[in-house]
Image (cartoon, rainbow, N blue to C red; front, side, top):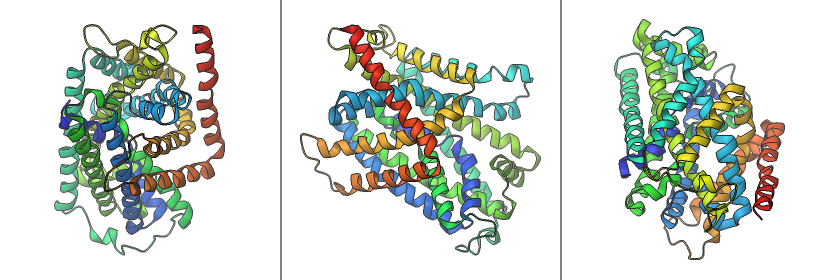
Length: 429
């Protein structure tokens, strides 16, 4: 994979369904364009600090596995196994299921489908993308890069049309700093908007999971992480401003209704179909990244647990396909677990439970830079990891205060990986 494909991984997972849904809620909660921009810029600063750290980690560990590899070398096998357990079996199947279900109404807006057929669309999407990743990295990376690079000009055109067609009104943005009536209390509004912004930026770290398949990782991953985050930040800022400039904050109701209003204002009766096409493109690109990246974590985890002998309960996931060279069994596991979650309809709960431990693992991953054998000699060290860890800590505290039950249940789900590892190791012994 070259620099374009690696950057597409960063932008592709971050720019997905969230950017069309969360800015409306953020704007309504904050009640001020200035606060909306401040939250985006604050999250962008934290994300860029994390991107610098992940670049260094990926260059030092140019192999597939991402966070699992970094945590194993920084904090040992137990902590790394907990992350791998969460990623392969719980979190990412839930994310994939949520995206595959969330895309259905937008596909129906483009292609009228009977309700009986629409039920099978999520499974079909998951199976098709799983097959693309099963049969070769070159094929899947080409499809992934194409989907995700198409997003950028499409969204840029959407932003340009909003501002230069006369639909954006400065009167909707001014007064810039004043909060509108009906907005949430300031602290609650900032906390909720920050969590939403994290959801939107989430996934920029996935490029580390495929580091072993990137050409010249020292150069290409540096460009991919930092350049990708800057592209995502620019699109989020401009698109959020376009939303607010076209549709007054006073008219914001639900997120989905707001998207419909935005589309109608820009394109008239065809607005719903135009925005539906944008959403489908963004979600498919994000799903493609997930289906490509997560099986690499499973592969790294299985290879570490199976050892040189290649035996045990996880040995089947420690081997690449002899012909296609892909982590084929990891792809099957990822796709199968996502299908199970879709059939159970449990993805909303899984996502609510797993966000808190995900933030904790990201902070721990960046913390491994302080435990490296050879010191980090970069202009941004140690400021960038400190900024990211502190930012992640504040975010984790917000999540814990906002929904303590979900956060603690998520931590309990992750800790269930310890007895699972004990049982697997005992059986192998």
